[in-house]
Image (cartoon, rainbow, N blue to C red; front, side, top):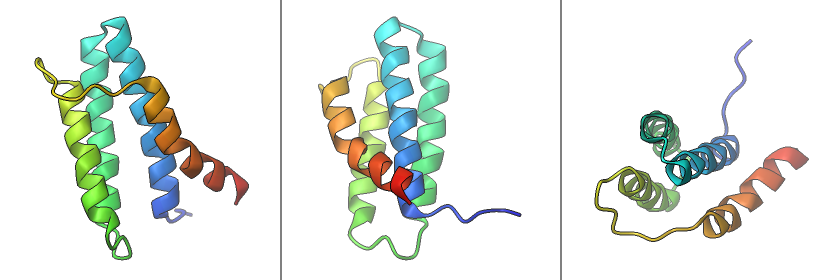
Length: 98
């Protein structure tokens, strides 16, 4: 039986993947960071494909640009782990409480 992956579930998983990506980058593990970024992009693609996403589509596109920037040789954004956790924590808490 395949369980439907809700937008909330996907966002919580994206938060976990983004946290892994951040950790890999911090440790200089660039190949692992690239693989993590690819997984994050797949999750974002799944989120954008949801029919009920509404205005969240533009938010997901911003997250896509952040992921791409994180693995760029010359990143434009300065996003720390604290900001990342603050953004994704509500999704994880809600997903766990269901």
